Length: 158
Image (cartoon, rainbow, N blue to C red; front, side, top):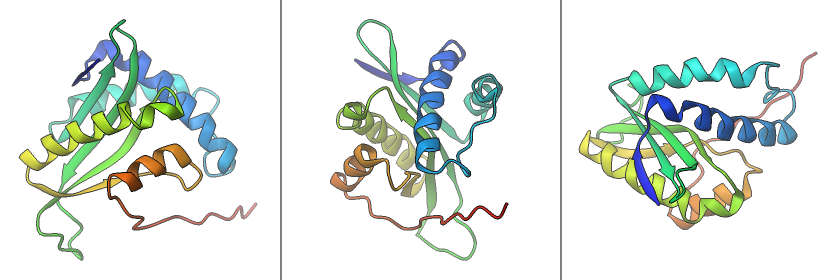
């Protein structure tokens, strides 16, 4: 198993993992997480732009058979001006593994690699997006010492 920088040829696998996560989240909150009909195809150009951004960290987990079983995209940036964590922050939004069981090994490996690279870029805080019903991912984050800082509440107004 290998953690390595994501490349353009990984985009299809990354998009497929993300599509599965999107469908999972749609079950939790079907209005906010309602996928577009062509979400899978729309995401591929988005992922390509993420790979090109200098302040992004884009990593994949590649199994011994060459299959991509997880990926993470993180952005190192300044904190909003109203907060002072003591340095830059690393925001992790796109973060997927192939199965719930994969969070304990693959998820932890990806997050450790991101954090190492983010610290080298001056980050002092790591922020990871995780839905409240995403139990396996949430458990992994809690085991690593992460705590909930914010949650969004949604109400359908239609």
